[in-house]
View (cartoon, rainbow, N blue to C red):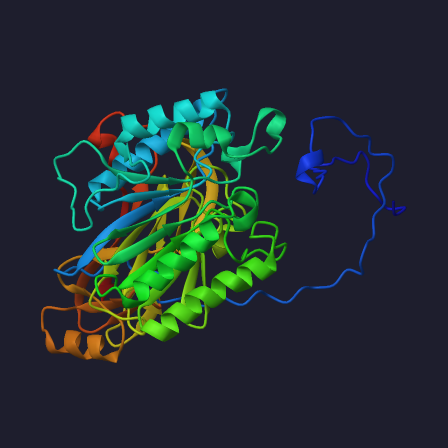
Length: 461
């Protein structure tokens, strides 16, 4: 080690991996020596701001109408029978999701942190008690069904992650225990014009986890091409095709397999004009990228401390989705409301603003640790959907047309653009600006689901 090394040294984490699954086993190893390759100290350039993707709603508003419907996603809670504390997160999150009245909920893997029978039995109990109707393969509700808003549960579809295949000492095995508890880990089904393809990537690849699901996906896409009742396709797997982090350690490992998946979805979109999208988790960094127009989204963690930095998608929450059957692949057929959990909100605004001037608003949330007090600070901006609202004399909208429309109304004092977070003062008066976020606290009754809100008043002079 360099001569100027400050002792003692602490190793915060170390992981040895045998890449041969057949040879993996519990045991010990000895670190015989540590060497450090120390680069020349330089000032790194600032990272550019994330480029927002239209898939994620700026202000959390989702389109509504006769041909639109909603579903929800949740992943990476990671509780066990030995350490069940995070079951409270799953319970509170599902209770909150039910209040949003989605048609269904996709549990996109790593709900448990281990796949022993007692862990999966606990998962069924927690999910069921929270309001999940866990749908067995082949028993999906009818395609046009809408859950009764007074019902005590919603349809839930459990996609296994890598942790559902872990056994004692976190040694990876297979999905035998998961299959015994929840049935076959992959499937397809249709709902209101959307074909869902749910895949098992638990062992780091689709073919390695269950070969049969690849021809299943191929056939599902082929059938959807000429099926007029199918307007778009949603593909789910726990491992994303691409990890937003520079390490790329949390993505599908076989890049030829990734190329195959991307080609299949691109070809489907090009040949049919129907929308196609794929959703992953595991990397725990809320992110969207596109390949030939097909969006690939990574979900945020819902319970476990996320990877990545908070300003670039490393936060906890869940996602509310809206599907519009009237829109084709080149239009906004899919939109996501990325809801981050908050225990407090800080909103930074000026006390006053001169009419005709514009100012950019900012702020942040502090996130809980599970259902307890936390310290993670996340800025109020993309990839989080920020739920802006305010007094009746505050208009919310983006673009010059929205500003021109607000100017014509003598009741509107200011307009807030949720895309740029800029407030434009139009005429003298007083306006209030409000930000609302989902809370995350232990569920006791509906009052414990109350959101977190903060409001600021601005004088236009």
